[in-house]
Length: 148
Image (cartoon, rainbow, N blue to C red; front, side, top):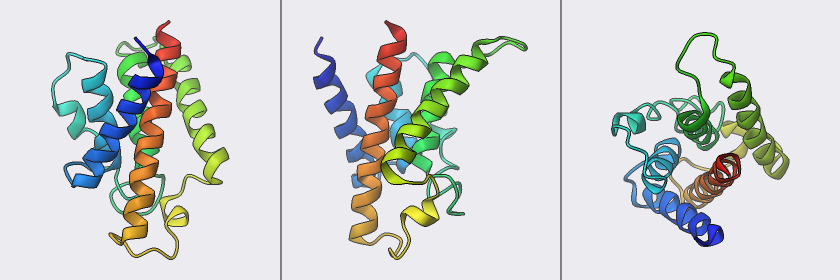
C-alpha cells in the first residue's frame, strides 16, 4: 500500500463531503477516517461530530475540523475504561494535531480564521474545504504512524 496515495484519497474524500454539502468539517473527517480505515463502528460515531462545525455549534470557537480530527484520533487510541492510561497518549496525539494546524494557520479559532468572510461565501467555503482535507490528511498520518 502506498501511504501517500491513501493520504491523498483521504484528503479528497473529506473535502468532497464538505464541498457537496453532505457533511460539515468535523463530520466529514470522522466519516472519512471511519470508512477509509474500515472501522466497524456504527454510523452514530459520525453523529457525535455534528455539534462541532463552525467553531462548535456556530459559536466561532475552536475550528470544527480540528475537533473532528481529535475525535477520529480518539476512535483509535482513546480509552473506554476508567483509569486507563491510554488517555495520556491520546491527549498527546490530539495536541500534536492541534499544534500542526496552529503552526500553519496561527490560531485554532474559527472566528479568527474566517474573519472578514461571509458565512457560506466562496472564500469561506474554499478555506473550510481546504482545512477539512488538510486535517483529515494530518489525522490519517498520525494514525498510520501510531499503528505501525
